[in-house]
Amino acid sequence: MKKVLLFALLLTVSACANVDLSLTDQTKIYTDPSVRKSPLQVSVHPKGTQHRPLTAYFYPFIIQQQTSDHASLAHSFAQIFYSAWAEERLFPIMEMQPGTRYQGMTSALETARRRGADLLVLGKVPYFYAGHTVDDTAITIQLDIYAAGSGVLLWTMMQSGRLEERPADDYFYFKHEFRMSEAPFNMIIRAIAKDMTIPLKAWLPSPDTQYPYVETPTQVKPALMEQAHMSKNQDALDPGHGVALPPDVTPATVVRPHVPGVDLNIQFDFDKISIQQKSYPLLDALSETLTSPELRGRHLIVGGHSDASGNAAYNQTLSKKRAEAVKTYLVTKGRVNPALIETIGYGQSRPLNQGKTPEEQRQNRRVEIRLADQAGQ
Image 1 (cartoon, rainbow, N blue to C red):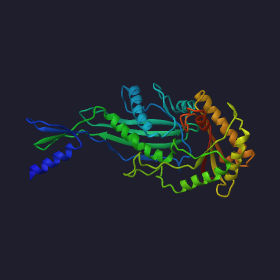
Image 2: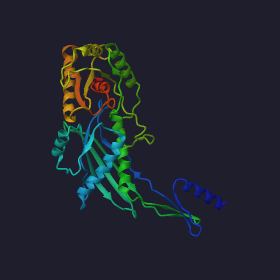
Image 3: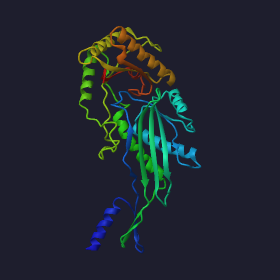
């Protein structure tokens, strides 16, 4: 009976491990240890959800523990974390410049603003221990996220992770050994980074959201009202969810907030910010919709988009000015409260398509309308 049980155990373990079979020596089964993590601590978080995609600038991590290799570790730890976040598509643009060194908060915020980022992401490592392949490896990461423009601290998260060296289990007929990773920090930092994306995904709308493309005035109100109805029915995770994340929530399953919106086919003169007259009826229909009883008092985000022709920095500025032109029209002609309108320029960072034809380029040169919260909320 014991042999049957041992054989069953051998089959179970070998199904998820590497097996070194031998006719003369004891068979060895190797499994990779999993990362043990503390609960994710979220001590600072924004109220509610964000209504538009944000861009982020990463600094190399700050190594707070004494070590002779601060610069190298600061960059390598941050690069692992950055790569894990890049896989999750948190931001339409996320940047980290190699070789940058942290020289204080003022300098870091100025750099983030100069690079056009909405957020400054600053990681700190108060503790780490490198056991390599012979001992435990552990690290603690604190992540602070600031609004680049104001310097306000928006998020503080902290989590510890460990890969533990475990003795082999000897079952006489075979031996079960735990094989330590040759890149333990990579495993631990990636696991922590993935956990930290969960509250951020619950806060940030997807940068890849596709809105209805509206080309006629009669389509404006039905499209916006349908989008607003969809957002009311969403069951999303609280972005500041307590001390521990629900065990069934992963980066792949977390629901991102749905922000109602439409893409408008607003035409501008070439390389200018003046709106063509043929687009006035669309904006008149938008003004009427925004001042209707159903949507009156809603905050509005007007986002300008460009095609990929020309310089990216120039297109960023042009798209912002075009969004401002739309705001001016809504305020002066549509009598929409200017305090309810925010403008943003996305440039060529979020195209609807590949822009291979003149028609596709025209669609990418659009104005995006997003509905935010009711005034006073």
